[in-house]
Length: 353
Image 1 (cartoon, rainbow, N blue to C red):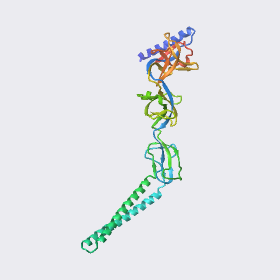
Image 2 (image 1 turned 60 degrees about the vertical axis):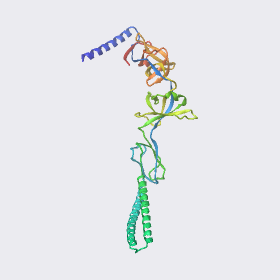
Image 3 (image 1 turned 180 degrees about the vertical axis):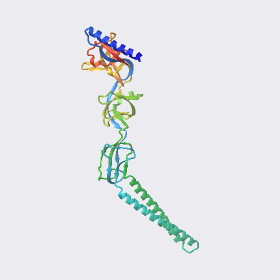
Image 4 (image 1 turned 90 degrees about the horizontal axis):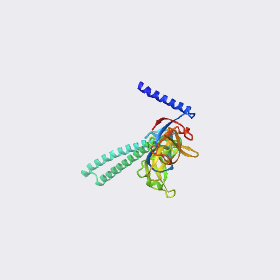
């Protein structure tokens, strides 16, 4: 335990010594900062294009049969795949199914009699006790009965099919975003019942200029920004190589699997607008924006803050290109820079990355 306490005490004492020295010299106390190092990176200039969060499964569910709507899920309800979104009245179909089954039983009884009748007539015909035409007539009647039974079974199966479709299931797990009919209304075949949206599997659709298409080759991740939040890196799911003749843009789909976002939310997607080049880059948090421009605070040899004006260029993830008097290996402030003013303050570096 002592070996951990002693270094901590030494660091605390050292910080007080630095503060006391600064106060004795009549200057401000050291500013507590966190630093990082500028690096050389291969980055490409970025062009931000607007995008929208969409669902990969967004369907308007329609009824396959006609009927009165008995119930329908409330807006916002999470419906699992296969669960009913709406239920139509089943009573008429149930009655029709009973009628179909009764017709089948009647035809089956009639067919049994006809088969037996054909058997008897053939025995009589073998003993020359009935004409052959009578046998042929009975066989034809039996074959007609067989086809009538097939038709009755098809009618029964069709009714059962419609009965099964009276309950409208969800084709995928999602939330009911909109109800387009209400209980008690009549829905015809093809009537849209509800809009179902999969809120778990989402992505961004963005329209990029066709001029940047060649720079996306080999690119796997794009930077996506939600409002004022920090950008995230998201994988490209698909690039649709079909341009619009009017807008001269093509579509990019960026996968947001695992990201929490509202469908319909506007975003900004950064796409490369040129080939990558070697640049000096600093963490995004090192950039301080003021009315007069962008600045970076570098740690000098005397452990003071130097304010350097820079120009911002390409970016990738947390790294931003800076053009100006910053070189690879320079130590720059990434936390606490907003309190450094015009620079020159002594620094107390609490950590470096």
